[in-house]
Amino acid sequence: MTILFSTFLLTLLVITAVAVVRTSNLFVAVMLLGIFSLLIAANFLLLDAADVALTEAAVGAGISTVLFLGALALTSERERAATPHRWLSLVVVVSATLVVLYATFDKPAFGDPAAPSQQHVAPWYLEKTPEYIDVPNVVTAVLASFRGYDTLGEVFVVLTAGIGVLFLFSAPHGHAAHRRLNGEDESSIGLRDDLIPRVVGRLLVPFILLFGLYVQFHGDFGPGGGFQAGALIAAAFILYALVEGEDRTLQALPFNALLTLMVSGALLYGAVGLAGILFGGTFLDYSVLAEDPVAGQHLGILLIEAGVGLTVTGVLLVIFHAFAARDSF
Image (cartoon, rainbow, N blue to C red):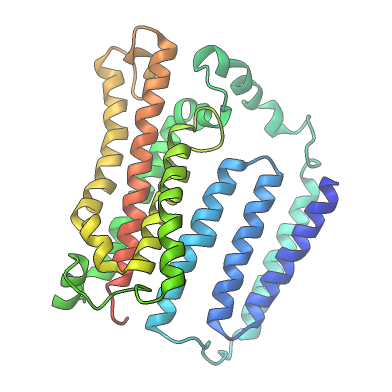
């Protein structure tokens, strides 16, 4: 049954991808890309990667779709005429696809217990997590503790991306954009005059926020964590901006507060690592944060996941507002 459903999802993914490439209507392409992300999220869920599925659904199908629609509002809904080198691009893409497909023949069978990925460090993680960290969700233990350096790097990559977007989008704005980013522009009213979207949006926002907080603080026991929670909380504020207007969203959560969020989350993560050194351990060694090493691990994971959530929320909202503040490219 699993193989049948996986084949069905793969077929839908291929059909959606071909439709995206073939359509010249960019609005249709954006909607299809949102559907593609939802299908990918369903595939991740089928592979028991619920954490990744949550992130893909929130970012890929949600926030990315909103940003694409914002780009269309500043440009055009129709694709430009084909370039004369279109066939060359097609040859390159087909060649790369064939090389990748050929490389898959040397991969072990799906789910093979003798595969290198199943025989390297994964068994050690599964064996030692109850002893060293004692959290039911092994994914959280691996990402937040055993491989805390990797996650720290990911957080600073997200922070750097937000800073880069600010540099790219903030320079040519002028006074009007400055007023909008500070919630002083009443022209961006969203769907405030449309009753049904406004009522439905108002009903959904608190539940999305509540679910985001649940995912944030329940990541030790089930799918979730800072990345997923940050994406969900940012999606709630973006939905509020769409139905109530960007000006009201910025009055509730000013742009400068968002900048503080995105920086403070990364600093909190780094501070937890430095605390490990100050308490006699090593960088990102949470076991020294409390008398009981397991309790120290729980405290450290709680703090760094909070830092991840703050940075992801701040960066996504900063990108959205910086994007929405532009009147043109």
